[in-house]
Image (cartoon, rainbow, N blue to C red):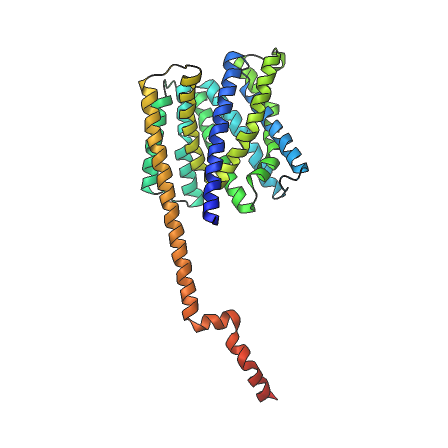
Length: 346
């Protein structure tokens, strides 16, 4: 199996792992919050990150991956920013309607594209832009309901979108710049992310729910479901870094919207959530956009690979046909004549 085929297989595996784990944890958390009334989302996220770090530390001691230290300031800034973005997303949901929060999530893709174009010089073809527009239209039809605007909620949503976009772009950039794996980056950034949320979580949850996480009645059933949620979060966090490292922040956001549609579908099938024709239409349109995006990405990737191969072939043919290149590379002509020169000098 060639390197290209291995990379594609690894990418498909990462995407599949991300979808399965994310849908599973959403269903688990929905049962925890709706049925068992544990509604402290930010604090729960801090526990997720703490458990993820502990599990990775155990894996490091078992030598399942190699610790690779790099720029500590970059890790600290990235970890803190990630923690802040999670907290802001929770605040955005708390101070806005569900419909406006879904619009906030939809805004992450165009914001990410804009930032990558402005600061990273990245280009997106019209085919990619069109497929993303179809995808966002479908998700909007399926998920956006009421749009109740307020100044504070809008400001929090803006901050949440910007910090989330920057954090996801940093994930991709750091992995490629410092040549670290998703596991290595997650291990080093988890303490900072969990610290931010462990400190701010109880206060944010108190602000949003008027309840204290410390006074909640932790029954055996609640505790078991929380542990299950934390175990699933290990896979979710790992697959998130894996997907962004192997693909791009935009692809990860596309995958996130696909997971939203799948959660809606599973919610209807498993727990019989209310469902109407608009949800079905939106999911179908989003699926079309997802297929178009995947096809166009694969097509452009193959075109770039073919161009790189043809350029390499041209360089190789030029090296074979130009004797000066062989002289510069091996100095073979000069090496053959050097004994003659030495005799003349003698």
